[in-house]
Image (tube, rainbow, N blue to C red):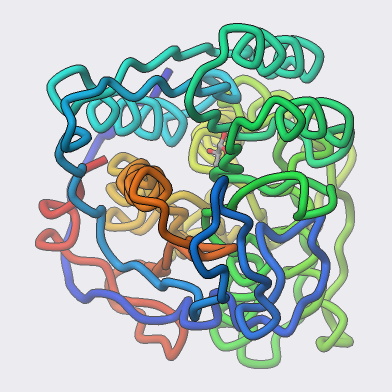
Length: 373
Ligand code: AHR
């Protein structure tokens, strides 16, 4: 459930900062959807033509859904989706359903796995039993994938790991695509260092779901910058499970335990809505005019409204419009072409009006109006 947006505000700007995406210097595949682009390996196409590793694609906009297969054959695709925990997820699901439509020549088997890893594994097994043409997996957690990925490989079904990463041998799946979560965390930290300009930071972190690469990556990236700032202290870091209720619950508990914090990092917008509710109830002021600086991730429409309103001071995007890239991969595989091992979906970061940054775009009504999700 989204929190209702109350007021509107001013100012402007666009794009920029997460050029760090795919270029963070991190080599933690469990937390980061991909190895650094330069290290990308060729993806094994099902019947590889020439499997040379092209440079990883850096895509800035939602790509067009491809036309149906030339021979009119319907392509069956299974999508084991994480769940419905956030506004981001809802936008991502809609994007897949719109892209892999019957009109576009697909038969999509969509399963909402309700944030349950065991259900997700069994869902993938079901897709294998049904002998679907392709399987897309948005992994709830990064660990625990080897066995079922091997089963899909043995069955000859190409697997696309989408949105989040798996901690598995890349030879077990065909390709991966998504945002660079480590770079997102670093963007948040770099922006904070610039904004605080040497001031002390007592930081509380509301993490995403335990074991998810989005959580691991954002935490790792942000901590990379924390370690460069001797006067920053992370007072506590707890999972809010990427939900508004989780964000509120964790923030309420933080408020009981800590009184000296000046920064709250929420690893998605829904958690930020819950954290704001908790701070409102406790009489704690936040935002550009308040005592606490809130950083969020996702930059969904409502999250950016709060950024425009000066409540969420910095909002680091995670672009949910990724299905077009998955469809492009599938069309290439249909044509017997090699595909990239990894496709990076590029993000931006946004800051409240009145703030200029080397790492983020200053928010404006125009940017918000152009938001499709
Ligand atoms: O994997 C992407 C993350 O998952 C988004 O940040 C969050 O909102 C979602 O639940």
